[in-house]
Length: 164
Image (tube, rainbow, N blue to C red; front, side, top):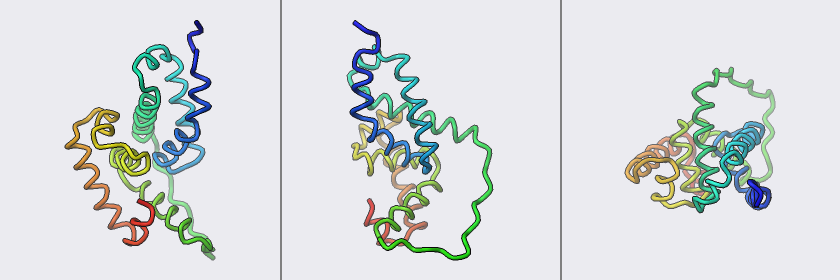
């Protein structure tokens, strides 16, 4: 039996979901691709043990969350991008809402962002989120509360309810 038996199939089946999670965690497509790649490399190194654990997707998500937080700690702050002279509004209000939520998510601390992504975009329960993040259910609840308070400050209320 090959050490990586089933790994390629897992990646093929779950890559889009993992990419979506990574994008929501990072707020940047290129950083999301890097995050997924790093998580899959780490997962491949321990694939038999991960497979024996019974939930490889949860393991990869946990690695992505940890890698994102570690990267955030190492990251040197970038200057704010310039605002274009002529903003061009998208014809789709839903797209505008999604972009506004993505921008607001980028302003949350990494732990709060992870909780919001896992709870509302990945539709995990509080217990699953707590298990994945290695914290208590109470911590997930308080982080969710704090994140939603901050998102309500950053976003107009119709935008938040459209997306979440």
